[in-house]
Structure formats: C-alpha cells, structure tokens
Length: 187
Image 1 (cartoon, rainbow, N blue to C red):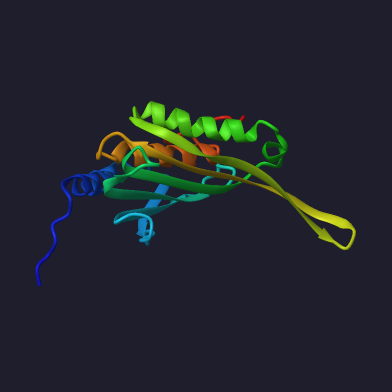
Image 2 (tube, rainbow, N blue to C red):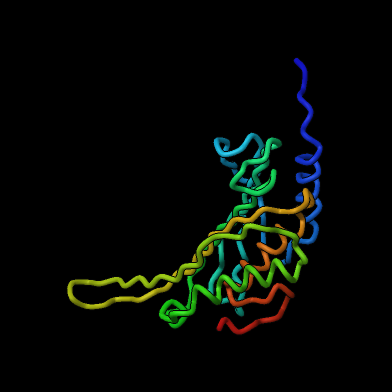
C-alpha cells in the first residue's frame, strides 16, 4: 500500500498549528476534534476551552476549523479557509446592550490585527442572546449568551497566528486579556 504525500502547503499549515500549541495562553486548553470532511479535501479542527478563573465571568468554548483545497474554491479567495466558533455565557447587561455584537466582532478583528495575521474575506456573526426561564408566570432567571462565528481566508500556509488570535478572542469573550493575570473591561 502506497502512502499519498500531503500537498506541501497543507503540510506546512499542519506544522504551523503544531508549533502554535507551545504558545497557547495558559488559561486555554486545546485538543484536536473531528473536522468536517465534506467541505474540502483536507481539514483539521481544534477544540478549545478557557479555564475557569476568578477574574473571568464564565468560561468560553470554541472550535477552529482549517480547510484546504489545492484547487482553490472560488468563494474563499484562496486555497485555505479558517472557520472559528465560540460561545460563552455573558453578563446580562452585555446581552441587553444593542452594541454587544459590534463589540464582540471588534475583539476578533483586534486579535487578528495584534497577531499581525494576513487575511482577507472576513465574514461572520456576533450574537448576544437573552434567555429567560419561567416557572408558571414567574420569571425565575435571566441569562445571556455570546456567540461569535467567523471565517476568513489566510494569505499564507503559516496558520499559527490565526489559531492564537482566535484563542485571544476567546479570552476576551470571557472578560480576560490575552496576557496572563490581566482582567480587562468587557464593554
């Protein structure tokens, strides 16, 4: 049985993700998870979770998926596509804030910029929802959830900064700064 060689760009991407694991912020744990196989010939996915910390409002969970098509898919604008998703409970005030989505989206853009990520075609959603639980006619509890779903096209097979920027965004969604032991304001 012959083993098929990986395309060099895909191999470089995988190596860069492996290299980035040594620079993952201490308050984040990552692990490989199943990747979708129907979208592109090559795919890898990383699951991530922020650790519970007294300064964080709530942990965040997310996933980063990297797709590669050597033939380049027209809608991507390149051979790679990165897809990120995260979810966390948020303060009720944030869920009620009409600018919550814009603020959350700015965390992603700022994280990509701070990591000097070269990308194009950034699209997605940032959604804050309010959940109200009732018992009969009595309101029992109100909670808020924040979700960010985004995708973009990397300009290089070196994806280490892409992964780290996504993890920085997760930390910001929990109220923590990407730098250890620093709490930042959520609004």
